[in-house]
Image (spheres, rainbow, N blue to C red):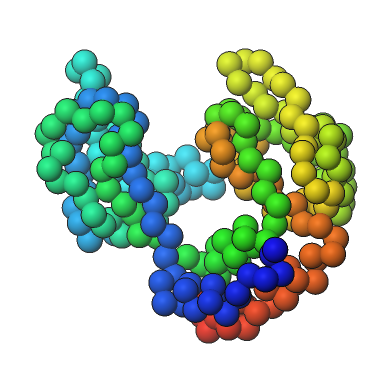
Length: 218
């Protein structure tokens, strides 16, 4: 049960290691050329709409068709697999890790994921809120929206086909939204976090506790 989560242990864990470790994999088969080195600081996408690419991490060349892969987050490069430099690798081969310093807000969200009921992407696709839900969110905000199992809450856009997505899970409010409309989400990644009404005081307690325990906002 969520109420039995040891928040003291969780907070201690984040205080001793306030980082997320983002593994970077080969997006497809090809020959790899690294563009960063161990210990190098990298930045994620910039600009008002994230239109400026992050730091270039590696180039992968397949059939003389090179593709540049940039960082999706800021942090420090660790565990780079230099043995793959100039080598042909398979899709999904782990190439390096970005050690991303977590902000207070990210730490709160990570801890909340232990408590909220997560509704995950059924397939790798782009997602949008159903028009009725989006209209209610625009008027009142996501946390004013209560949803029940069986409600049509999302539209999945895949291969130019839109399919309604129905919520399965406990009744509750939409507490957290993890996707951006029109941005592809991998299968199994959380789309929204639902909070049962009786858990709202617990959620508030977590947020207050993290804010009080964290000296600085990294």
